[in-house]
Length: 405
Ligand SMILES: Cc1ncc(COP(=O)(O)O)c(C=O)c1O
Image 1 (cartoon, rainbow, N blue to C red):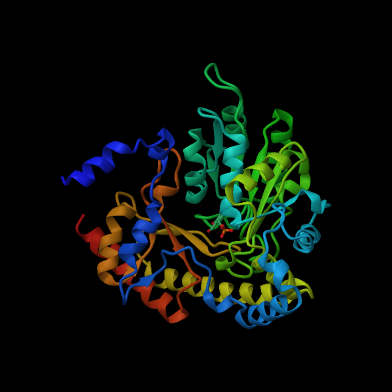
Image 2 (image 1 turned 135 degrees about the vertical axis):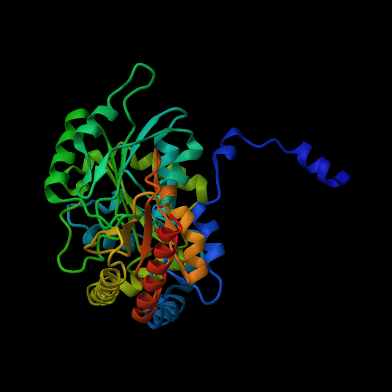
């Protein structure tokens, strides 16, 4: 070790919470799978074909021409007023724009929620499985993350009630983090009956809900049931995003929070980044002002639906004779697959990459005990031809692994 290294290692003492921060397992996997020639179903990226580049070029020019200095100045932490009003107007319940906080992606929303609601040792509840990025945002605050049993219709409400209650060693759970629409990673959607039951039970036991809904607009045949927040706005924090309906590079999302929490989220936001980029917010408001999303989002739905259909057809054809199960998501970007008994997705991945296809193993998405047979496939960034070839390669890898016993 050189003297310099020695001084560096001894001079810095990391905070305890830094030890809880881990590189996203998915990003690590993606590094391996982004080799040229690999068909990747692994990423969580929207299709770049859906990005409205020319609308943004026009909006960029207009914002700079009409409002340049203000767009480039520091701005209010709450967000750009007209954009907050548009967000309030597009949500399907009565939202006061004063309760809308524009965030730097909904990922920042998760980070702010963690800072404002979690103490060291607080219990928080999550679905089984859940969004890995939320676990990454929550864990540095050192909560006890408890996985609630979940099935194809969403969380099991009785298990939730049992796990929410205060225990001998800890107070009641701080919140349930829940993704009712086209969930990441499973693609599943919570049914109307389950939402009603969850909303009722959460109100009865006084459990707050954090509802994350970045995919809700990307439905294929029919819109999903109303958000949980619409049923009980004072009992829920709602997180939304412009990433999947416009573009993730804008880094814009929003939080709608109850009166009791909104001011603290705002103060946490001030500490985090003062405000989300005002220039981007003005461009988004400019792009959206004439009902653009009403014309644009249906084109994303149609594209993603055709890709989901292609993947379902390919799975049916290629997985014949293999004990592989998968679901049929009604929207969003992901499909959830379960491998035959005795096979694990982690072991399959290198063999699939050898055959030219990549996916994300499901295990990192579990806060508790993982189902090692599960994996996530994204159907939105590959072409229909690549989907055909890629699912064929995946089936070949599963067959080869099965025959090795
Ligand atoms: C469930 C979920 N929540 C939040 C995010 C973060 O989205 P963004 O920060 O781009 O709004 C993602 C991104 O993939 C996601 O899948």
